[in-house]
Every structure is written in structure tokens, then in C-alpha cells.
Figure 1 (cartoon, rainbow, N blue to C red):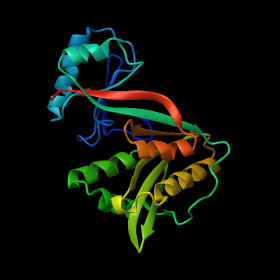
Figure 2 (cartoon, rainbow, N blue to C red):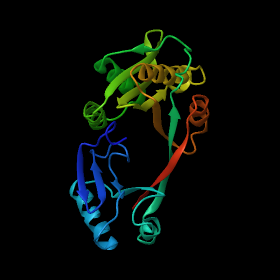
Figure 3 (cartoon, helix red, strand yellow):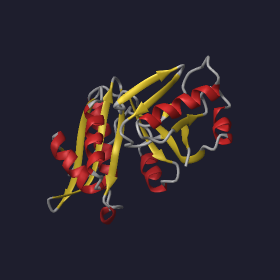
Figure 4 (cartoon, one colour):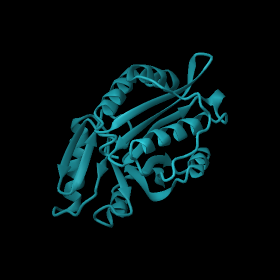
Length: 234
């Protein structure tokens, strides 16, 4: 995921990876405590708070069951860090590739896709620019997809191929056009595209309470790889 969806700046500090991207998404603006440490935890938390404060950002930790040290979640809770956004990483095998479905999924150039995404999601100008910089910094090959109705974009999605795995990002369907199969069509098209290019695994990230998305992904064979959650200070 880090290679497919990089931050704009990364600081490695005693086993923890600090990511910064102008505040666009928690994933790209959080502390990832992946590895064992040597410094006292309280000192490290204070140093992280300093780094994020210098950039005008809140300090947010992205935590998993394998974060280090093992008691970090409770330590952060005791320090006033509240629980935010329980999410899931899902993965699916791509052998065989999904069968073709709805066919009106268009692969478009980057400029057309960003215009469609911004029209659908309506982010502020800073978020628009930051989002594009993150996508363009990806190490992978990107597949930009949209569905149009009456010449207007109603759904979009992005596949990023990294080695033999494809990550799915920015999957979104406009509210009036949901439950029409457009999201499923974009997912299926992205997985078939990646399979033809050698991908054998797919992964994505989704909020744990997004039931409609979870049902969609389950139909493509996605299953839980691991959960994660965030802790941040008010």
C-alpha cells in the first residue's frame, strides 16, 4: 500500500514511519509503528507530535494488531488519543480473473479521470492538488476508470499494479446512481486488467461499517487480511 499510495513526505524514526501529505486522508498523514523501537515510548510520541505540529497537522496513529510496542494502543488511549475509523484491509486471489460484467467502463487518461473524480467528490482545491500529487507519485502502473451516464461521470475507480498485486483506490459512485452495478463493474474491470498484466492478488481498504461496499467486495472473493484503526487527539 505504501508503494501504491505514497505520502508526499516520509520520516523514519526509530522503527516508526511518519507520513505527511497536507492532511489529505489519515492513511497518508499518520504514524505507522511497524517495527521494534529502542527509545522510550513517551519520548517517541512527543517527537511525533512535534513533527506533525511543525506541519500544522494533528497527530494521528494508524494501528494494527502487530503495531510495536504491543501496548501502544492502550498507551495512546491513556494519553488522550481517541479511537477513530475502524477499517479493514481486504485481499483476494486473482486466479481465475473475474468474468466480464457491465461493459461500459471506460479507461481514460489521467487528466480526464482527475476531472471526473473532482466533479464527483468535490474536494477543496488543496485536496485536489494533493490527491493528484499522491497518485502521480505511485511506483505502480495506474488504470484510471470511469462510468458515464448521458455523458456525465457517475462512478470512478483507480487500480494500481505493483509487482504481482493490484491495489484498488478511490472507488466512488454518485449517490443517485448507486445500486446500479457501476461500482461492481469498475472493480471487475480493474481486476481483469491487472490479471492480464500478471497480478495474482488484489487488495483494498474499506471502513468496517461500509456494509454495501463489503458485500460488493465479498462477491469478488475479498476476505479480511487484517483490521486497522486510528487514534488521534481532539
